[in-house]
Image (cartoon, each protein chain N blue to C red):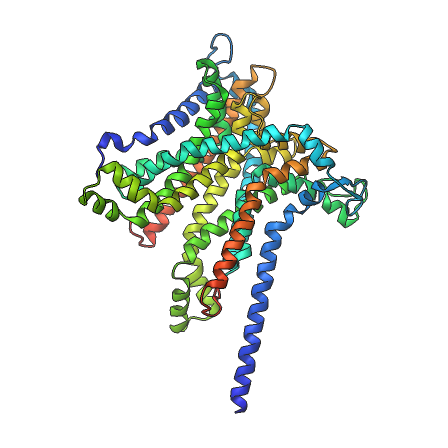
Length: 284
Length: 277
């Protein structure tokens, strides 16, 4: 009897220690990921924070007002438009390549993969610098050049994401639709693409983020006319004494990430609550 | 459903045109063959002009890129283990960090570690007493800003490699008598290594070519290659453009060269371990 009690106590202690370690590790991980954003959050609501004071002496919207005066509104519109345009080009393009890769239709798959990955291996600055002279000489508008380069840079993300979707789906459903009399286009439109909607949505999100986040390609090829949020933020952050403005711009530039944090956090937590409890996972 | 051979590579023709055309133009610019205005003046003047700065710039670039890669891999592996144990908030935070633009990461590190930043305020350091973490002798702030964002990327990729079948692998090893330490070293780590190697290479290459983080947080001399290249490119002296192109080419060669070495080494190790080719 005493052995059984001792075993039960030992198991309970071990489980408690394991839970504490797991929670501690999760806390540290959250700290590493989120604490770096703290000064942006504090400065964004500070109107006065002078000297070496530990916390803002006055809260307010001074940073937001000056960010709006610096062009936050138009920059937000340009960044959104650029992200959407990159997604609109790179997603169908990636779906085309993804089909070749995912269903192993390519005769030269390695060459295809190398060609896809090569632009990502090159410094974006070098690619933009090379094209800068070319687009000036042939008269291509800077906005078009920025879109072309960012679509090329987004293509590996969209192509490999959709390729994974195609690989999971397999060609079976489309072949069955064809056997039932659907034409090639109808089979894709009515069977394959709806089944790939999650992969296509993820690919579009990744492509949007490539356009939204870009700094150096827009700076070089945009010719000073395409002032997006990252450019406005970079200009503000490189100056001194305008921390509230910089923080307000940073919050807006990070807004897709904040939306993702809230949405994904809620989805994962609700999935965890509704999943059947199978006991602790444990990494080891 | 098999496409014609010629159509096979059709979707990547624009990629080849953009990347190949850009690199050809950078080579031509560095050799004076593609000036912005005026007649071409072929030669190596651009290379000669930038040559004294290239050595220190390559060292600075490698220092910050290797530092960021090592920190991102170590922290990313730790985050992956936390995610593997099931931590929905951490996973959401990692995804969010992945979506944060690099310039925001650089900004927030600047507001933490710069003189007058949160670190100086909360530590009570007097004016001038706070160490030069931003723009100082070592690229600490640049490494931290890059590693912060890239560690989330490493974690999510390693998690994707580890998660399928993880519980079964560990239980099988335990059933066969492997102690916890051996399960980690001989089951978990080898499963994670390919993902760690691939993400490490991607982080290294990105850090070599990334501009905005090093520009905001790095010291002014020596400059990393992208910062040196961009400064020369923006110079009012048009003769600096070939020198800028030369520096950009060195950064490209460094990124591509390290990739080739890593891929060749990976293939050799794979063959030695008996992996299917």
